[in-house]
Amino acid sequence: MSFTPTFLRNTEGAELAQFLQISSLQADLMLSRSTCHRLEARQLELQTALEQCEWRLASLPPGVEESHAELLRVRGQLENHQLEYHRLEGRYKALKRQRAEEVEQLQRQNERLVQQLREKRDKIGSLSRQMRDSEVAAKQQAEELAQAFNLLETQMQALREEVEGGQPRGRQARRQGVEETTEAEGKMLRGRITFLEHTLRQKETEMHRLQEELGRNEAQLDQFEDQVTVATQRLENTARRSTHLEQKVHELKRTNQELREELGAVRACVVVQAERRSPQRAPSTDVLREALHGGRASSLASTPTQGEREGRAASALPRAAQSDHVP
Image 1 (cartoon, rainbow, N blue to C red):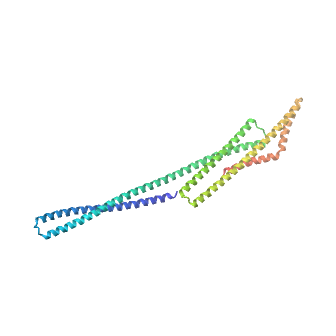
Image 2 (cartoon, rainbow, N blue to C red):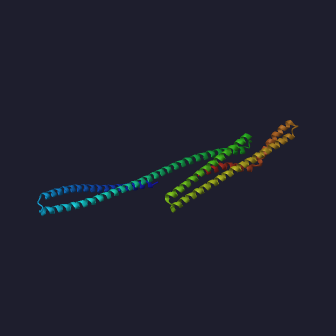
């Protein structure tokens, strides 16, 4: 917001010019008042002199022409001074009205400038609060995503160790692992969707505000359209990375399910063989152990390629999560 100091300097210059103009009008008004007072005093003096002349003329004989001429001259001066007085009085009233109008206009202009300055300050404060809120929201979303990714990575590591070791888990442990994985995925997706919606709303709000302030400036509109395009491309890239990560997770789940089904089939074969040899109890125990050991070894030996593929998928999952977490 670099326009605020320039706006304040322009406002101070306008107020200084208004103050100088008001001072000039006040000086003219005071000069007119002093002139009127002098003329009024002069008028009183002339009236006094006229009365004295009339009294002297009355005391003189009627045929004195000089006194009569002096009386006419004094009356002419009095009329001239009265005309000048009325002219200055009219000018004084006109200047007074003009000054009142100009003062009122300057007051309205000052109030308008103060209101504009207050709006600019409020707008700057609102932008600062929005920036702070956006930063806090972004940090919270980043922390939630980091926690979700860490949880998912831990679950995938445990699942990879289980697949590589070939040790079966209990039903409760499997259910807990599936629930934790589902919860981590849901938290990750909800956090991502919330973050993307917040980012999109922030971009849209910023675009509308700048369009209203700049008054449909084509260059600025093009610039912000480019920014929106870049933001959309980033959102699309993020969505593609999220889709790729989801595919990896589903593939790993499907492979884990296949391994569990194979383990269940091996157990079923061992149980069937044990039931068939139930009359021979002593050998049956050895046969059961041998069949269980041999079935587990054959299951692990028959699918080395699949185990390697799942190991690579599980090891690639944290890397994909890390690449998706780091922009």
